[in-house]
Image (tube, rainbow, N blue to C red):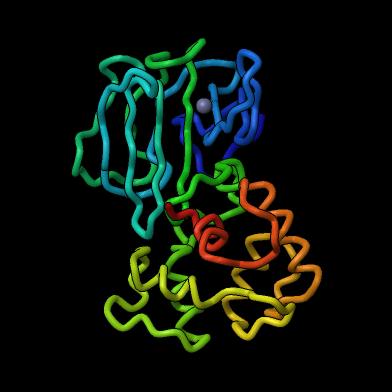
Amino acid sequence: MSEYKNPVLKAGKHKVTSPFGMRTIFGKRSMHNGIDLVGAGATLDYIIAFADGVVKISKNSSTAGEYVELDHGNGNYTRYLHMKKGSRTVKVGQTVKKGQVLGYMGATGNVTGAHLHFDIKVGGKFVDPAPYLDGEREFEKTVNNIKAWQLAAIEDGFKLPKYGADGKWGKECEEVAKNAVCKQRLTYKYKNLTKIVQDAVGVTVDGKFGSKTKAAVKNFQKLVGLKDDGRVGINTWKKILGVK
Ligand SMILES: [Zn+2]
């Protein structure tokens, strides 16, 4: 049992009962978009805010149970599910500080036992919370993916005249994404956008759209359920950036 740099439990220690990722429940494969935790020694504990933020949701739902969602800006959110009935300490719109108690672990909603389901969205997209809890990744310093993409597009010579790099996905972004496509060739004139693709598909980030990048794009497309043609079209961009 280790201590965590960025805890979500007051004692600063937790045990993972179900990690982030694909899992099988009642014979069905599904995506677990968060991490399930109990306290050290399988004990219960107070749930604390993972980072400074503003309460976006604090309510009871049939599936998530008593839960709280915090907005940390830049498209970054954290959620704390299945809290004990009546234990929530925060209201919508309230500002909270890192480490502030939000409630107590419980078994409300759709669960088999008491635990905390904790999830993180970075740039509007669910990511594995483990590296953030361990302190391998800095949550407060994570970038807004869409804003980074917009800045890269502007550097590559695209124009976003109305809204600029506002961090929000809209019609202007759709237009740029349609044009910033790898077509029939393996060369890619948009160096910065290529780097974003390479970072997303897990190959060396050098800004050159070569055969390795194309193969990795195909692999990525297969994983997210797109046609694996190795071309970064609008649907692939949306998956890369986690936008609908
Ligand atoms: Zn969970």
